[in-house]
Length: 324
Image (cartoon, rainbow, N blue to C red; front, side, top):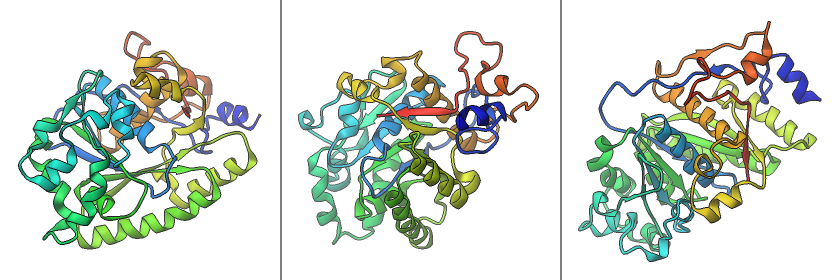
């Protein structure tokens, strides 16, 4: 009932007016890719699922996308159908060996315009080897430098820790996206991540900016709604309008090795990931996405109407994003 009232009032699930994000324009400016690190030291908050599906949606909108698996578990590669244990070279060899370039390791995915720079268990040894290296925090920055001009967006799926690998990811990134599970202990851990981000800004990457906070694992419980309210209270407009709700759909996409935009392209979850991608572009490419305030005289149009004239390729705005 509360969600229904918010919809009638033109409010989204975060309790704020829900704007409409139009279909993005083609990217006009050249130059290096925008690098986005998806980071949270807590596991199971939706980093990998979001990396895959936002990347696929950005590729649908004509962006050249590189997914970088920076977790030794290799879940990102498995999620796009590339099994990490079968790979001869990974990002580990690019960072540590010095004889393999990123171009040699990058693999195409089934999504046109989206590539993968994979990882596997070898990456777990990188922190130990990097400790004695000069400029150890910039190892990933150096590895990505030759390929940044080949892409529009690079998404880094960080491991669930705040160790040297995550420091490398944040040092190489222009932006950090924080998925936050709507659960009390997860919210407490964000303070530690904020402290790490502040140290990175002070010491290794003063240009690092917070892209946004993505509420995940949202359900109908009072506890989840209370935590969501606290997230919005703490971060304000830095919280994405799209939130991530629980669903059983995404395990199927993991088995299939494809994003939801391919597995179930007409589903609400796919449409929602497209909306999240439009929100991302509105923040990293100002002017590329028309953002329209909700029409309180006709809230149904703001919440459910199709973008543009409703023709092919236009995505209906949606207020919630499903996640398994």
